[in-house]
Length: 109
Ligand SMILES: [Zn+2]
Ligand SMILES: [Zn+2]
Figure 1 (cartoon, rainbow, N blue to C red):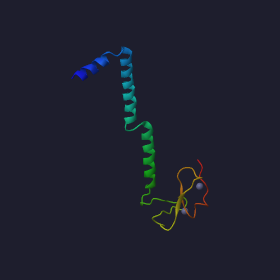
Figure 2: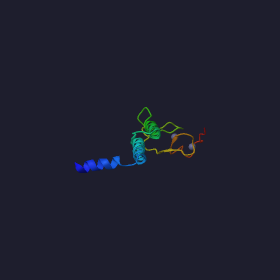
Figure 3: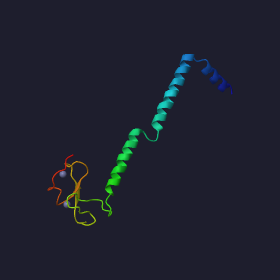
Figure 4: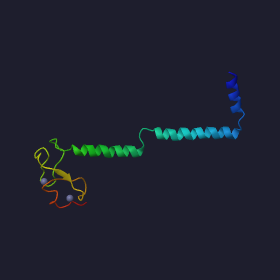
């Protein structure tokens, strides 16, 4: 009990400037701590939306196919023996079967 009183007096004895500094420090600590703890920053929400879009794109074909050739329209369901690849030179995410991957005309936007 005496120790508590002494500690309290110790705080009371601090110059007003130091006390103000401490409370200011606490405020910043709280402020930045709070910012860090926020579940989703705008940047994270943006990243999540991009990720969601990508996931949706992968399963957009009506017959359940995950890959579809832009040229002939064959999918990994109709032709499971084919390999499908995205073309890195075409605009957007365009997928081609192994027969058209190297023969198609690149799409530019
Ligand atoms: Zn094809
Ligand atoms: Zn291409």
